[in-house]
View: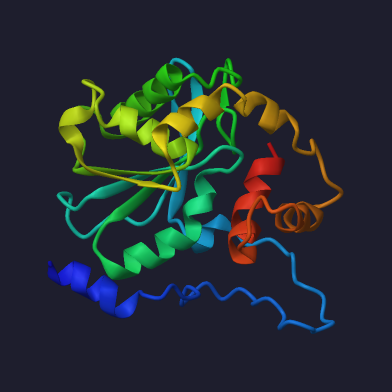
Length: 234
């Protein structure tokens, strides 16, 4: 077991609340105090964002600070259906406190601040091509070591993208969360219907965050506070 693995096992299990987010915690059970649904800026977790222009359209990408050496890995995250690149905010805070790396978090087409010509085209071939083109645009001819990290739908994309002849040589690792590829692939066919079933607008960002928690879309209030605004104010 490597020293990094030992550190994770010693310090990170069982899971705990992130150290430095500074966001108010949920009220204890039985408390009458109203939960705070006020939004939190993505800038608390990421250093900058860029809109990567490809032949398909503009893809929003959030980046944590540059690592201390160009050879350090970039963890390229792919979110699940109905979420956005900001879903990885708390993860970004934690992982960059543990190791020298950069998190690169992309809004998949049809999500977040990404704007493409055909947002309803969620075929696996199209989604993988999007990842290929974003990586190529970000790093030109010499991409750094890349670790693909995908959740649910994003996991299915990551598995396929890792075997893409366009970027395969730059992929040094892959991890998927909460995904069985066959199930995730089948879900893509109904993803448009799922996305259309969400409310199209809210009275305020606070109402959107509250809906996100109460509907079960996100179970972590801190995550909803930072990721929800990007999904509804498009």
